[in-house]
Image (cartoon, rainbow over all chains, first blue to last red):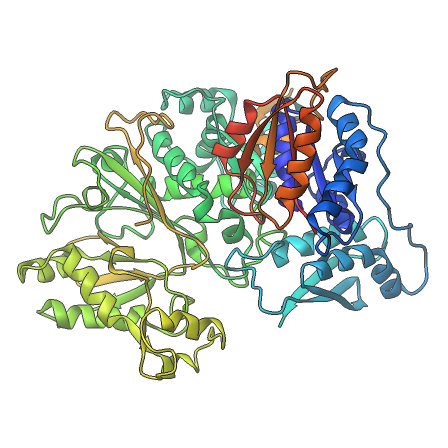
Amino acid sequence: MSCCMRDAVALEGLGIPTVILVNEVFIPIAEATAALLALPQDYPNRNIVWLPHPTSNKTKDQLEALVGERIGEIRAKLVGRADGAKTNRAPAVGNGDALAAARAAVAGLADSLRADGAELALEDFRDGVLSATLNVGSVTCDDGSCILPTEQLERMLDAMLRPKLDALQAVKLREVR
Amino acid sequence: MNQMNSMLEFPSEERAYEEFVERYSDGLPVVLPTPERVARMLAGTHDDRDDVLGHVMPAGSALTIRDVAINAVMAGAEPRQLPLITAALEAMLDDRFNLNGLQSTTHCGTPLVIFSGALALEAGLSAGNNVLGNGQRGNLSVGRAIRLVLTNVGGGVPGKTDMSVQGTPAKISFCVAERVDTGVWAPLVVRQGGTPSETSVTVMGADAPIHVADHRSATPQRLLRNVADAMRHLGTMSATRPTQMALLLAPQHARIVANAGWHAADVQNFLFEHARNPLWRLRDAGEYDPVKTPAVAAEFGDPEDPDTRIPVFASPDRLILVVTGGDSGGFSTVVPAWPASVAVHRFIDADGSYSRPRAQREGIPV
Amino acid sequence: MSFVVHDPRGGRVAAAPALAARPKTLAGLKLGVLDNTKEQADILLGRAAHLLAQDGAQPVFAQKPSFSRVAPPEVIEQLAMCDIVITGLGG
């Protein structure tokens, strides 16, 4: 998803309207990527068309029907009438149990990662440091095969949580098997 | 501090210097990239300074030749070195090199940059005594310029995106030129398919270098068995994930080999056979993986047999063999790989201009 | 007194990326279809391209080698010759 968005940014930068069709389970990654790339806030809404999750268990006919139902939105985003559905933003977090708040804030992202076979767990929030683990099963990131390198995910978590957790100073993400 | 287009304005030179050393340097003093200095640096290229070479990960920022020139000024490089720096960066932007991964890994990995050909030496790079060390103005400036681009444009900043646990001094600069005057065998640029009048740049995602001292060996076999011993040390990632590896061979060592009638290919073949670890030894290695390592072993023998020997680089031609250093002793350097990257090389025109893609021939993995 | 130097950070200092200007109609436009090779992307994009062709767009198909990397320069160059692009991945 993150790489798809970078492709879209590159193409839009060349003056080519680009629309991305993607499963809505990746909404949190789209938001986090937009934060990382310092994109204007409504960027994901203006050129992404979301498909309902799940898509992996649908037949060809069902998938084509999903596209057909959304062709108006695809068309509108290619010719500039941006009236597509808004992304779901996690609610701002107030005072209280900071770790629970952080968990709530990243619940959507955790769902996205689970869809790709990785389990994100926030373990501890102490002295401003949020400790988290990412269980990736047999996929490693150092060989370039994973979808989201651990270090990049750590920066995404930082970018997502910093506006919501005043006490946050650092995110430490550890990969486990 | 204001931003005007791609210029930065400061109340004074002193304030500019403080900001640059704090935010845009490798920790060492930098030369401020004033418009005059950058214009002088750009005189070193025939190319359009707004030519976009690619996008440098992890930040993904576009890199133009002007951006290369800016960072080259900061590193203290000379205009005649700009085509070399540009060629090296363009090679690193090749997808196979995996700059994104190399910039963010927890490993000490950093690019090793090898120039082979007369142009590099004419541009002020060195290939003699202390080639990897201090005092090598050309090598250090070129290596540093490359590194500053990776940090400033690519966003590979220590502690923020660059998660290297210990790093290595090679992250300041890691750049060598090949000796072309020893006569032992054809230089790397020719073995890569170039002509003797061309110059190539080879970039490899590298581990920290390993030194090999040998003043006893008088035969290629004895010498290269010692080199193999250094190559197969269990603390490298290459031990369990063979890709490529570099051998920076001292001229004295190269002469021992060549005087016995061996060529570069003989060195590669011998080391491919001898720089290996048996599976039983790898089982205790720090990077052993119960699924992946036997899968790798299967490419070289029976994965169930504990005596199956796994090489530290994937095939003889994946050993990047370069003769470099002074003539005064028998000290060579092995550079294992950061294995999630494939080494890439590019050729640079004999007249020093660097025009993409017209004049270059694409390098295949060495 | 002010002291001016070049910014060493490259493309990062451009203004926040703007969306490209949109055309008024799809008729006659070259439609780049970038398949990122994740499962089902071809079905979804193929259907979208088929429907948009009925509005007069002319599909041009391209594929990138890996969904976990950005599109290589030669693919971007190919798509840069189109007027609009659709891309995507499944779940």
